[in-house]
Length: 174
Image (cartoon, rainbow, N blue to C red; front, top):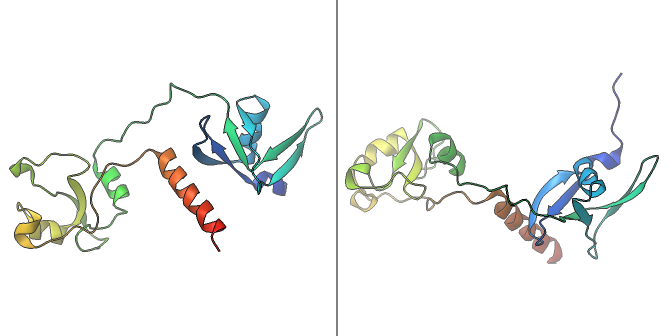
């Protein structure tokens, strides 16, 4: 026998840091746990949706935005190491020279033989054909151009906050 979750449990809640930085979207069950344990508080904006959740002992008003009441200084995010998996993820599994998604390798924009570092802003995803064509030369020597400038990944919370504010702005503009 399969049981269905009540519709309310399928809702998502946006979590803000103590300093009002949007951090992530979480399911309402996790939000309830944060609210009940005092680790978060509800935020009410003019357009905030609210759900009433009942248990035998309490009635809880859960809003679609909550704010953490304490920070966790022990949780630090580190920039991931420069490796094949992370570079492919950053570059969306696409050659940064021609846009191909087949036979991918890594390429140093400034070759290692010319003292190019193995760093986030010098390593890109390249297909075997483009990597072979470029070889041990600089881009301007053979007329190749990068589709996007390589850079280190940003903190997931910053990426989420950026996306969150873009969504908010587009929903407000006519």
